[in-house]
Length: 118
Image 1 (cartoon, helix red, strand yellow):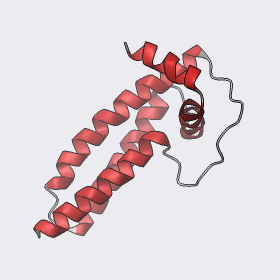
Image 2 (tube, rainbow, N blue to C red):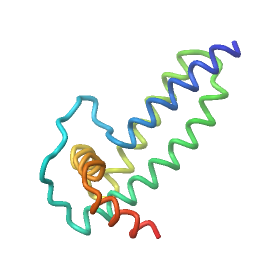
Image 3 (cartoon, rainbow, N blue to C red):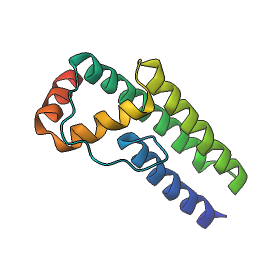
């Protein structure tokens, strides 16, 4: 049982880690020249903060999951909440993913995002 919990925790943590960079179920090509407004970047920062909180909450819940069905159910709940958190900021998941990729590839956007977080 302990091995199952460790395995599921690791799997869930990996899935959530990737969701911060992109929530979509399908891979996307990295954007080459994306124009991200200050308002979009602010929305992205808010969504990212909410996603981090959801990840922490569900990571703790998953550690207490007794079986694979419960773990799967928790993963689905977490994904739905993360999608809702993105949409609550006025972004859709595709825009969130595009902005996340643009940030990874653009040091200037990374710096702007850090300034928002201060």
